[in-house]
Structures are given as structure tokens and as C-alpha cells.
Image 1 (cartoon, rainbow, N blue to C red):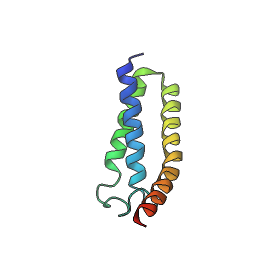
Image 2: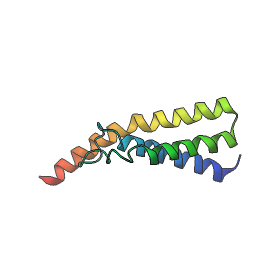
Image 3: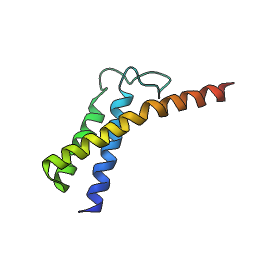
Length: 95
């Protein structure tokens, strides 16, 4: 297993999931709201696709898909809680 490819797959997967979360209208990370509608999902989608392609080079198809989806679910499960923590911290700083 190539360690560089593992880091690339994990890094682009996490970055893509975060970018897709930030493109959502219901996200709580950005006080200004989601990104502009025109280029909302493209950067995240390309990163997520690159992550899947890197994982396919490392693992079999089924194992790569399972690992990829698990990584995305993990990031998308943590992001709302981290956003709520950040909003609470932002509110305390404004007092």
C-alpha cells in the first residue's frame, strides 16, 4: 500500500466532504451563508471523485467504495456539531 496515495485519498476525501457541506444552504460554519449558487458543488464534487479514484488504485472496488462512503459519512456527521460549537464560540467572542 502506497502511503502517499493513502494520504491523498484521505485528504481529498475530507476536503471534498467539507466543501460539499459548506455548499449546503443549511450549513452552520459560515456566518455569511452558503457559497454562491453558481459554483456551489463543483470543487467538493471534484475532490470527492479524486478521492474515490485514489482509493480504487489502493483497494478493490467494493472495499474502496465502502471506505470512501465511510469517510464521507464520518465527516458529514462531525461537521454539524463542529459548526454548532463554532457558532457558540463566535457568540461568546462577540459578547
